[in-house]
Image (cartoon, rainbow over all chains, first blue to last red; front, side):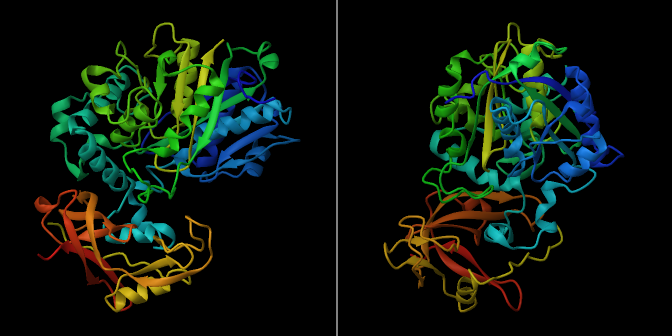
Length: 385
Length: 131
């Protein structure tokens, strides 16, 4: 076996509501999402024999297994690096299923990121050790500021405009306005409002930043044979990859030759397309990790939707909206649906391929999902049955 | 301008004590591989260019150019320029820009300066290069 292509599928998805204060524990959120994913698939939680967690998740596998009453969990890796882990958890599950190491693998992320530890305030909560001591004490106080440095370089090299970042924010907000689960469901956003919002770290203003959310998402991965007997149309995993690029350091890979190139994706993308056997032109809908708007512009280049430097022009005139060239983050993404470390974007990718999204792309056959930027990361290509 | 917040101070350890000792003496010293002669930053055990474990702490000229930047408008006393400076020796440093935000430009020549943030810790900062 030299490829993962179509050897596993996602058969269940589960979510909690998304809010600023869930009012319950991260363990409770995780269990709710896993149970919902099992119900969706039509399996008993007791059939789970593999669990993949984010290493940053507070919920340990043994406690989850105890809650679910699992008696023989066989596979329980974890994937590192915050939001970079998302698609990687599905990759682990896919590999385990393909190799017969587990039958039903649950992947999940649960966090009280708004009511608990807020990543935007990480500087105040961390001892200045490790590599962040070379950035935070100089004023680079939060992930957005670290991305701003890359965005300014991109603007300098290619003439990318802050209005291009606005196009990203507005496109995803329009989708959220049609998604009742989105935290920004009832809040409209215009390009003018984006341009006039509070500056936080030049060139990033308020609406260039993602949501801070409480909530959880989970999915169940199994084999195509088992999927035949389950409730949902399976969504096939065509390709799954992890990547780092060169000189990787979490959020501040500034020693790279070109800091306007998100190498963690650029160098992963050829492997991903090769495994899937399709290319960017075949993607009907993208779920692109959007902690900050410039990262979407840059990822479009990394994955070959446009040439390096052309991400700005690409997103203009509503290209990322439904009906545009590449409908992206159709549930609102991290910017406008919720920040569940991008696992909500895996869920939305599955919905699109089932044809059940509230913001459905017609005849959606192939979806790209990406995970966190500026960190060791991962991506998936999914297809409908 | 908001109320000034205390500068967060790093916690030196075995791998980077020399770097911080240098800053306290107002010298910018970085690791330099004694096999391939390349400088690197931040302090790590192995030379990522030639995989040698051999290095010395070598003083840099303290001159470089602004490779990129951001201006903080929150948390720090703002607007607060943060520069990514590419040193003549090769490595890039995140640093505080000692100039007005309007003056900051990619490609501008800068030179090292120093800011004492506590009794134990002095950090580098960069100002416009003298003519």
